[in-house]
Length: 239
Image 1: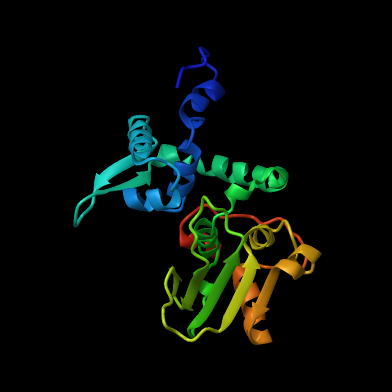
Image 2: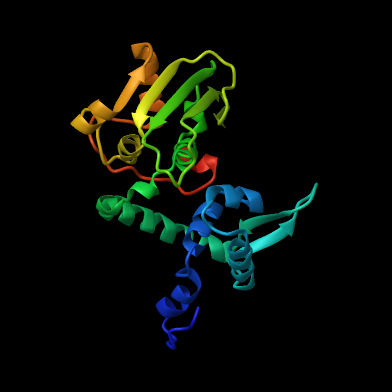
């Protein structure tokens, strides 16, 4: 991008950081090293060519490292110490957005795949049940621009959590049938489950104890609350 013509550190940082998609690439790498296809799955609206370009630019600026995989083809992308210094900036952006952007969410911003990837990334492993626990999500009112897939599965079994796009074949402990936007807003903390939109838009179909366990695992509460996101590897969730 063109420079600002100033030596100010804010201006120079923005020349690097304020490019379209760059903050989201750094958000993903804050969660740990990733391969190219991992980033593509998490940023599906970003073209393959532009992603490759941004990664090269970040490497040239010393923000990320690119190393060849130990086995098999492809590279691994990871933050350098300079890249790690962006972590508090990403966290601050997330907190500011949590407080000030819920009113500008658009229908096309709601994506079931990204939602459930995000949910799974915020659950500490220590909370995973020792016995297999399976939740099926049945979403409705999915934007046309997003995947038309309606049903998704979480399969918990300590120390693993699998997000499945196809029926894994295990007995279902709980079905959560929900309007996609309503569930997203409840998970973000913008709505409480006791609020009328959530009462009308989210149903927990199964035994009450399974519903309570799911609410605890997913971080769903009766009243709105500010969710604090952890942008980091799984061990940071245990802190």
